[in-house]
Image (tube, rainbow, N blue to C red; front, side, top):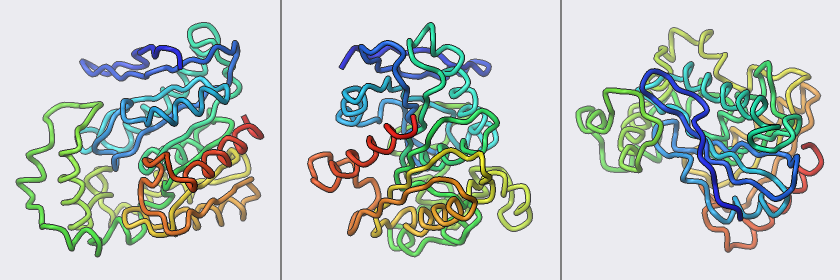
Length: 289
């Protein structure tokens, strides 16, 4: 794997938003923009798993792992803008700066990154293909709008403690401690409200624009959905629903169900199931990018 290069793809006030580029030796290679997970609250471009970067590089892809501004300091509308701008930056700078083919770009994301990748399928400037690892299409569904049964069994997080992890300025990288804020959101059933700045009950119409499942049309890119059927964080049904809606709209879609797997199953790259998933993902990308 070649040495990574870091670029600022966007600046908002004092906030510098960056991308790590892992190039291949192949000129005019296709590119994968990777969007990290972390419930939009924590994580960073550095959290991409090295073995996965290596797999994509070996298959001939330049990998661009991006940061974006995190919630709740930054709301969903601005986070969506960051993803739009990252995609446009790779398309515009791709040929000369990154030495890629700007007409061959895929978005790959896990969890919240999968969600943002799916959201990008409805952008005016689209990627050629989308791969969503345990992402979601509907932030208006009960799983996010009501207290989570799974997370409610964990020690109760008080509001004061949750907000002690929130910064007073925009941030693009968040450490794992910020999971406590997420836990508070899920225990209260208020993630959608605090991330978007809209009220789940009153602003349903406004929030539909942030639900990929409601924004699919015939121009939506070919999409691969990968999900473990024992996921206790993002319900497996979220990928099933997305798959059904894509298929109904005549969009090419595949759903890989990883039997018995939970959330973030791909963090263990030694398992044969994980290796098989990546083999299938690379085969999908080869067909569409």
